[in-house]
Image 1 (cartoon, rainbow, N blue to C red):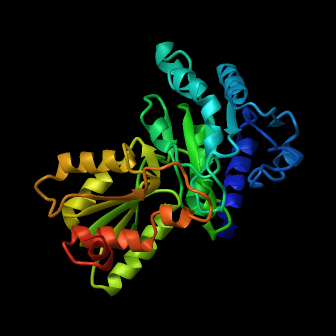
Image 2: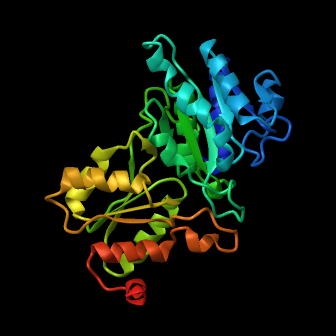
Length: 335
């Protein structure tokens, strides 16, 4: 086991994929000599050359469009979008071409393309640098959408995404880039499943579902709830599309209560899909209507206000109290 930051674990995952397959090529703005704005690709151009770690012009649509052509020719391109809000110039390429080419060609063409997107807030940046656009891509048939929350998953899931013959939108929680964790660099990746959720903490009273940066916050909330006599089971979604409803369903049938948290706005977010799907599956087991704890339905705020926008421990605990039908300080203030 090695102690790596989340960012270094991503780097190690790409390195292993590049060593295993000469068709893996990285592309993006400043990812070569600079190593990327977050230094996630640091050292890879030096070791693999400029023909495999390619510094591109500032043109997201061109980056993804070029990657589509490379995938047609048998390569496995991995493209970096510098910040979440910069993906929109490439949106047409992703939803109109990348997601549909396999279907359009009756399976004759595959798109083994990985699109890396640092996402979410908490780093003191403004809009276009702190957004959570995952629902746009989860809504699009033909795309896999994933988000690891730990260095170990970052290392393994990066390799799984690159090896996948389907296009994968890989959301990286940027405020966790510098957090360290144990990583098994010998972990078996081939044949392992990228789409399954993980139970990060067992519990019996409430199921709490999160993904990306919110998993750590959810775990902290579960620890705090335990001091108040509430046992919270925390599920790390990992795969945003497809959603592993089986794991969530099994948990909710045990606990009878569901809280879902994410940074993105509530309106038509992942929380809506999860709570709706679980209500359909677990209607007779639910003891309370599911609760969503999310970002507000506003453009991403200025950095001085972002910590009021991001769902924190107190707001998640309020959601837990609500499904437990318990009074709490937040609801009393609102009432």
